[in-house]
Each structure stands twice: as structure tokens, then as C-alpha cells.
Amino acid sequence: MKIELISFGKIAEFINNQNIEIDGIADTDAFKQYLENQFPALKSMKYKLALNKNIVQENTEITNNATIAIMPPFSGG
Amino acid sequence: MSAERYNRQIILKGFGEEAQQQLLRAKVLVIGAGGLGCPALQYLAAAGIGHIGIVDDDTISLSNLHRQILFTTADIGKLKVEVAAKRLQEMNTQIGIIRHPIRLQKNNILDILSRYDYILDGTDNFESRYLINDACALLNKPLIFAAVSGFEGQLAIFNTPDHLTPSTNYRDLFPISPDKEEVANCAENGVLGVLPGILGTMAATETIKLIAKIGQPLTNKILSYNLLTQEQYTINISHGGGYTMPKTVDEFLNMEYQDTSEGPQGYIEIDASELVKLQQLESTILIDVRERHEVPILDKQIFTQVPMSEFGAFMNKEFYQKHVVLICQHGIRSVAAAEAMQEKYGDAKKIYSLKGGIVKWRDHFLKP
Image (cartoon, rainbow over all chains, first blue to last red; front, side, top):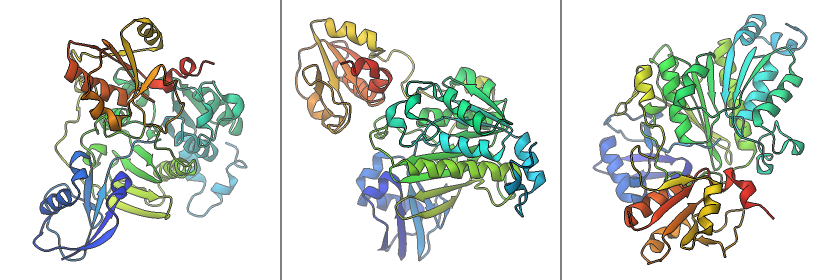
């Protein structure tokens, strides 16, 4: 399955925008697990995932060529 | 109303007389007269928002001027709300501008917000943002949210229903405030003046769109902006869960918005005069936990440099001083360091954190 991964803020410092090819991951819970294994720094950060421009609030199926965004909170002003 | 002043908006197809009237009747509160607040205020006042409130308890510093564009060199040291209000009033003599030279807290925010119809969050810390978010939800006030970090920004409209979704709020995105240690930014990460300039103007834009009912406001959406690429990415927000929102005034007043826990925390937050007293005691160590590149540079004879990134290693070593004062730029990281110290040393040492940090007590630190 092909997934386009895009990231923002501090997360973009260690996760580049990239296309990944992964198998055996069918939903957002599994993908989050995969991300945190690949990028352990995520474990101690607050962030939200969006699937095809929709915020992920509960476990959601991922289909081929999905775009997943990883977004941290900003506070600066 | 001076039709001449707003003529160029009024003749614009898609805007017009009725939209201008709506701007003039609107009451907008801008919280924070800083990097985001200044451009937002500039354009809201120019456009003819009839009633604008400004909240900020801070005074103007030299390092503000690269991005807080309502202020001049001669204004350094003055209250931001005073200078902003004066400048805006000079630009637009027909609108009302209300100064709130205070810091919003649980005990005053509901009263102040209730006087306005639209709230624009231009603050610079999570504590305020969650406080404002919850207050807006409780009071049913549309919240225009803008924030920056590095070369990126975020913009959203919360607490406003659209035809598809009942209103969402900031906690539907980020239910829990980040920890102090996660907030590495403060003022040290730095920012280009144009970034809050752009986001502040975009926030004013969304406010105008909401009031005049034009275009597609970012209701229940969050727009991510990248200054370096000029890319924007907009995400739809839906209702989340896993958080507590106060539903009554009593519940609101019982919420905890500060990151320090209530009850005996052990370490004490001190001010500059208490710092001076502690310095005079024999067994005191003053620890500057800022990273080595941060300014102003302090006298290393007086302030031991232990950046947060090296703090763990420092804690593994023994040191004899009984009084430990932690200092950082804004008093946020020093609290995290104080908590760590308190946990390790408990009753063996007395731990202090300088509340508000070097920025709050700049006169003390920059004495010749």
C-alpha cells in the first residue's frame, strides 16, 4: 500500500514529507503504532493525524494512495 | 459612517454597504497585542470593525519591534494596549477601542469575553489558549485561532457551527495541553516578523469573513501555512473525545489551566527581590537552564550554565548548595527543572524557580 506522509512543525524536523510503501497496515491505529516505532521521538509528543484532510478521531481504515498528515500544536504568537 | 473612508470596500462586488454595516456593528476582542495581534488589529481597525477590545498586560521591548508593527522605537517601555489603542484610534477616529491592560485568568475572562461577539486568540502560550478555548465554548463565542512556530503557522475557527458540523473546539484537535518540557519554544526558537504578520492578517480576514458572511471561513477547519514554500494544507476537524470541557461557570472555575499541579509542589516560584535575597545566602547556586546560544548572556561567575538538554547529566552529579534557583527565559522551563530537582532532592534542598524568567525581570538582569 502506498501512503503519502506529510508532517508539520517540529515533527517535520525529523520526519520528511515522503511516500512510503508498507504492507500489513490497514487502519490508523496500526499506522500510528508503525510511526511511533519508526520515529520514537513521536511517543513523547502531542500530535494529531489527518487522513485525506480529515482529522482522525477514531480508528479508521486506510486505503491505497492515502495521504496522512502528522500535526503538532503551535502556541507562538 | 463616513462612506468615503470605506468606499473602496463598499464598492467591491461581493462586499458592499450591508457588509460594511455589519463590520461597524461587530464587537471583536483581540487577545494579545504581539506578533499576531498587531497586524490583526491594524486591519480590523482599518476595515471599520466598530468595537475592538485589546487584551495585553505587557510592555514594549526592543526585540518586539521586528514583528509587532504597531510599535516604534520611542514606544519601548510603554504598555502595548496603550500604544496600540492610540495608534489605531489615530488611524480610524470613528471606531471604539477598549483597552484591557490585564492578563486573562479564570476569574476575569468570562466577564470580559462576554462583552464581545468574536474572539481572536493572538496569545503566545498554551495555558492562555486552553483557557480562551474553554471560555469561548462556555459562552458560545466564535473563536478565531492563530498560532506560529518556526516557519509555519496554524489558523482555525472554533466554536462556530457550519451546515455540516456542530461546532468543534481546540480540544477536538489537541485535547491535552503539552507539558512544559515539550514547550521548547518560548522566545528562543525565533521567528521571522513576516510570519505572524501573515497569520495575523489571515486571522483578521477570517474575522471579517465571519462578520460580513462572505466567502468560506475556516469554520471547523485548520489551515497549516508554510512560509518557506507558501504551501497551505487545510484539514477538516470533527468532534473528538477524551477531554473534559467545563459546561457551567462552576466547572470552569474549577478547571486547572496552569501546568503546575495544585497542592504542595515543594519548589517555590520567586520574584527578583527574593532572588537577590537568596543570592546573599551562603549556600545558594543559581542555575541558568537556557541553551547556550540564548541571549542575554549572564555572568557565568554568578549563574551556572546547565542547559535543559544537559540537565539530566547535571542531576547525576553531587553539589553541596542547599538553595537551588532555576532560571530561564520565561519561567516555564525553569519550572520543569524545578520539578525534576524537587523530585530528586525532596527535603534535602530548597528549590526555587524565577517566575516569569529573565524577560519579566529584565531590568534586574541588564543592570550595568
